[in-house]
Image (cartoon, rainbow, N blue to C red; front, top):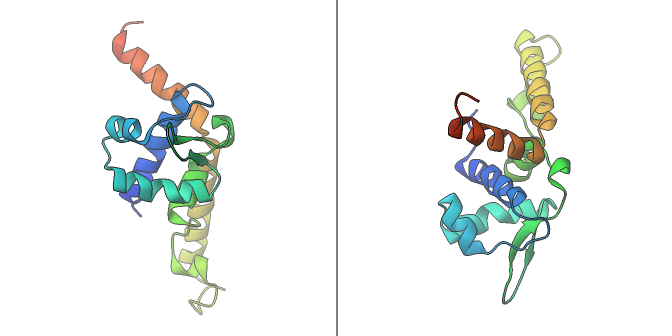
Length: 146
């Protein structure tokens, strides 16, 4: 499974918004410039985030985007599910009637366990965690021996 480019940019955009002063409305052009994304693609990736209540938009002069929630309340799983839908590794996990082998298939058990573990890991990391990690990584690059 490979996440879509839209999901990758959605994560980057939410991290960027979380790095801005709280309640500041960020202009679309600034997001596009800093995230190296076209305005049309940004609109596409923001729509599911707005629908999921992760990002909000302000229209009109001075309009733009900002987080709708505290970065501590937004997880990687939230963003992935907003962009991609429910996390499902195999068709048999989406529709129990898809495969007649679900009752005894050993691979089904592995798909289920893997999906569960991946969901837990993605849910463990908040956007606030990722903002802090990025700050620490940048500090380490600036001061490698510190």
